[in-house]
Length: 163
Image (cartoon, rainbow, N blue to C red; front, side, top):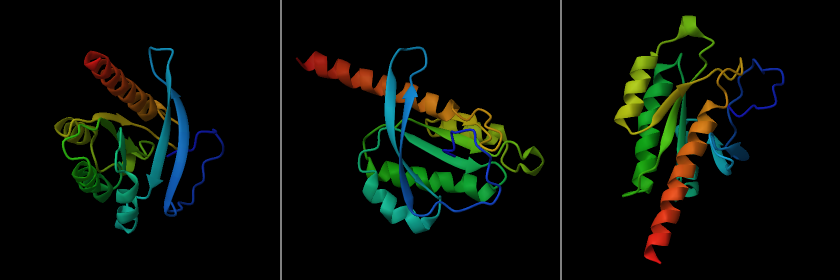
């Protein structure tokens, strides 16, 4: 998902090996601010579950990405969100659910309405994209930047009210 150079799209799928730490600066829409995300990118396989749980002790935002052509991929979002929320009991963690591979419309099995409903039910924003076609690629990052920026402003206001 994090290909951002516009280079040739690699057609041979390679599983994310382990967990990658990525740093991405994103402008906050409708402001002059930007945020820098430290992103833990992993495959959605249980193989990396234990490692991830050690890394996300205090998550600020969450981005769950599923393949619109793979029902199991979508269904596993529930498990990942439950694990994340179990780590952050009592905290509201804003985030976004992202349907990827929209370029494969003829193979689509998870409908947009179904995913949108799931996202709303779990307090998440929703968007779709195609990394292959670089369509709507930046949308999840802009959504997360806006959510994080709002969270930051609320914390600053709370801090100032204590003074």
